[in-house]
Image 1: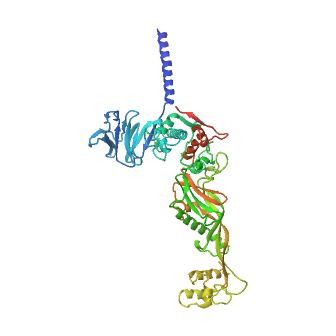
Image 2 (image 1 turned 90 degrees about the vertical axis):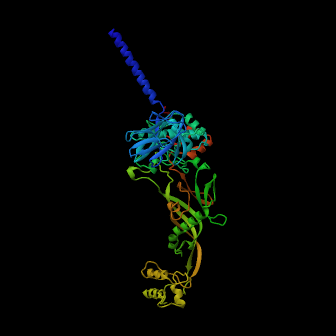
Image 3 (image 1 turned 60 degrees about the horizontal axis):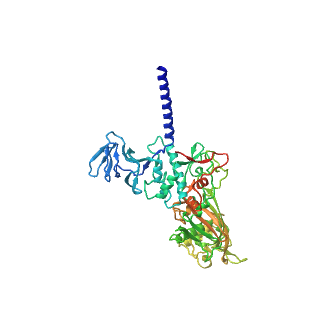
Length: 557
């Protein structure tokens, strides 16, 4: 009997061990839940509507289908729920306790989101207190969460292969956040600080289908998840986290800077351009255009863009023009003739020096195009005075004794003060800057000549000529951007300046909507339109590199 009992007990232990192991394996392959903080602002009360007959509050108060309820923070530490008549229907009781609204998996709660308007949410709503106001966190399955992400991070009208790529990238990003947020009350927020999440909308059938078709699939990198960052448009070049955010981040195989022709080929990738002719003519002047309805067009900003750019470029050129002996004190003194070269330089972001990082991507190169400045070689028409051999008087020599001395400075100053007026040839000689009047700038020029700081060489019988002169100078893109002193670009959402050229013009583009790291959503859209599959799209944006772990499309559950 004892042996039989021991045998039965052993069988039970083995069975229990098997069952526990099976349960553990099953739990590892189940779709995980995600906790999404809904950005309802700083508030002490928030209302919602139950859209289903199975909802309850804290598992004991049944909500009425179609009824509106208001959750209030009271006495600084209590969360209570009231019906539409103001009747307290669900007191939480304990200070700092949680109010949980739960129901069936397919029913929804309707919220008036401060940023997104009326939206439907599946899963549970957890009302807690944080920072002296209500905090609302949506608890739901990862797949249900993606139903509310994919059609808003992309559009439901995007081709299905692009939507599938978005679903995998968003699922991987969320899985990474779930993994790293165990000590927090939520995993993600519902806006661009993480991923845009707007709840459930059954009409988004393409996006929902893309989520279902890729169910559980994530990108892995060795034993970790790929850092699946993505943005709307990379401007034609991918970027890396080390440049944009952290130089201490170890390089991974997919940290590669490379050209993305699909992003710029997409007619809906946002961009604006300043066109600088190699030879300015009436038929080919400076121009500014913006992407509108799929193509670059002249807009209401074009006149201001050209005027501001022209003035800024001429102001930047002035020191180089005057250094060559030409008369140019204000931008209107010179006229742009054409542009022969533009070379960008000075990286924007982290490009070496900090934390021992040398600025290169995983391939050992730095092909980053994100620059702050450019050296411009431009030809302008500028004027100068040409002296014939002999004759005339030296400008500034008011006493006409052949040299400029303190006596000349005194005569000009007394004239300006109205104490002793100059006349005749002396008046002509005193007008050093030849602007038609004797002013403070003239005696300043005389003083600088006497001090040996700026020589006066002009004579009264000089002939004035205007001729082309080529100069090179430096421009700053931030000066020309939104908020700069000489705004020539107008889309504040863009952040990458790219210089291109052809036989006739230089093109100074501003592109890149977002950080440019990982997948370009516009690039993915274009690739899908050209017949690429979602796994090929992901391979392009999260590539492998020899000697590093590979990125794999893996089933998480």
